[in-house]
Length: 73
Image (cartoon, rainbow, N blue to C red; front, side, top):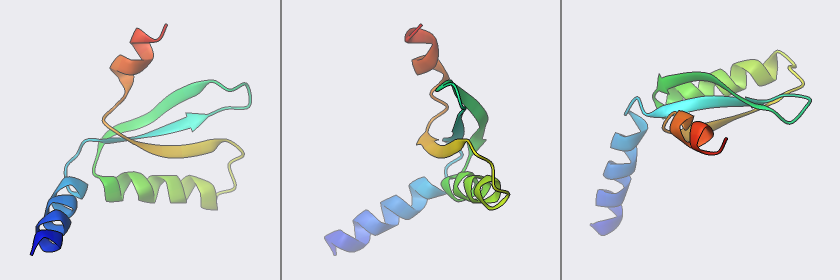
């Protein structure tokens, strides 16, 4: 029962538009590509860029991470 509750909570969080896609360029600079996505949308966007053969690294983060980036400066 506990596992099912954890799975339901995980499924619900995947549907929240609280994920962002980030990119690391050739000079190790991180850039926000898009935020306000569900986890599935963000993962699909990363796959889309990877399939196109972009050289940069792309990844998904929970939240926009913009506050984090500004605080780190």
